[in-house]
Amino acid sequence: MNKLKNIKTLFYGLICCTLFGCATYHSPARNTWPTYLRGASLTDMTETTRIAKKPVYLGAGGKLVAQSEHAAKLEYGDDNALALAYMSDLEFALYDALRKPGISVQRAGTDVVIILVRGAIMEMSVADISADGADTLKTISKLLNKYDATFIEIAGYTDATRDSRAAAALSNDMAMRTGVYFAQHGIIPQRLFIVGRGAARPIAAQDDIGRLTNRRVEIRISPVR
Image (cartoon, rainbow, N blue to C red; front, side):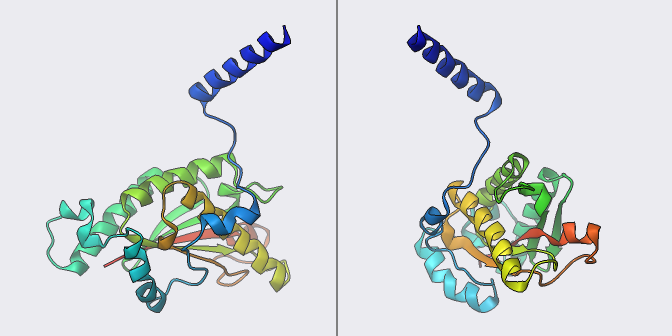
């Protein structure tokens, strides 16, 4: 009887998983993160670090904008025009897909920046990605896999209510969790730059409302050319 009951429970669970989606996402154990992120750069994405990383990225199967399937459809000749058109299309695709509270998509020159307020992607009570956050990051992952001729900087930020060491640890945790999620969803880690910046670069006042905005993850996407 118990065996039959267990089979029925398993069958019901499989049906529910198929119809409604499986269990809530949880980040893997912290000691496995280096395995997922092997090849990622734990530093700021600058012109110098992009140049240094380019051979590693290409060696891991990466491509230039001019070599991408998407760029082949664009009627532009030089690399700069191709990159601008490529990133413009990515910007609009992200904007259309991410119309949710606490999320914004911006242009910064050629780059595209996604700002994710912490509450939009992370659990409030524990250090983990929320169900809504996993759904959002899955959407972003799909588009970054489509527009794959890009480097990606994931930067974590927090507010100024913690001491500098705690702020650095929390911001790094948010960035690393996001990077691990991307690596689990098809983004090669050789594209990634991951950094925790603590309370640096606030984008809002350090009051009750502003602090919620300053706790965030910024994803900066840059064309490889």
